[in-house]
Image 1: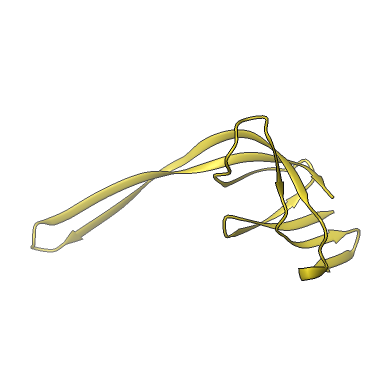
Image 2 (image 1 turned 180 degrees about the horizontal axis):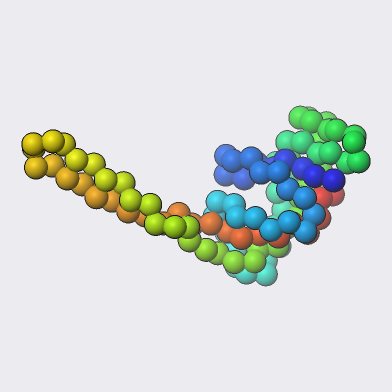
Length: 100
């Protein structure tokens, strides 16, 4: 059984007991979260899509982490203009506990 959920504008294919990194979800390690915006559910070959989906995906927050550093560098030739900007994106590590 798997489902496709929408988290912060991004879609993720999830299965039970799977761990994955999603864009930051508020909460601390050990908290339980529910994702009600389920786009598709496949239950043993029976497919539910769109408004027919009545499922909820339950997960547990394992950790709040940061991604690798990304550098955005801009420069204009012969003008003396250089700009360097770096950031690290925040992610939440979750474990899917149930698709109901």
